[in-house]
Image 1 (cartoon, rainbow, N blue to C red):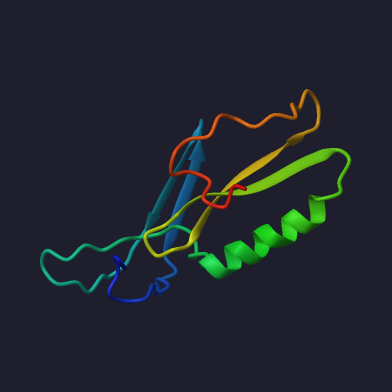
Image 2 (cartoon, rainbow, N blue to C red):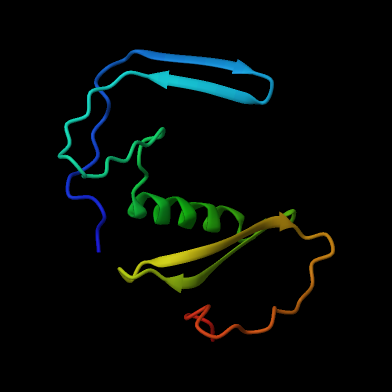
Length: 114
C-alpha cells in the first residue's frame, strides 16, 4: 500500500535560511503547497533514495568488504515489508572480540536463514 498519491517534487523556491548554534540547526524555507483540505503533505529535507538504489549500494558495500581483514560487514534479511521488499539488518564493525555464534532465533525474523 502506498501512502502517497503523487510523486515527490522538488521545492522550486530557493529561499532557504539556516543558522547553526550550539547543538542545533535552524532551517527555514518558504514554499507554496497545493493541497486539498484535510490532505496530508509530507516534506522531506533530503532527496528520496529509491529502494533499488539502496539495494545496489548495499550490494556494492557487501562485495567491497566481503574479504576485508579489518572491517566486518554483514548483511541479513531481517524481515520482508508488506510490499515483499527485503528489510536488511546491516552490521559494520571490526573483527575485535567477534564471536562465532549466532543470536538465538526469533520467530518470524530472518526469513532467508538456513
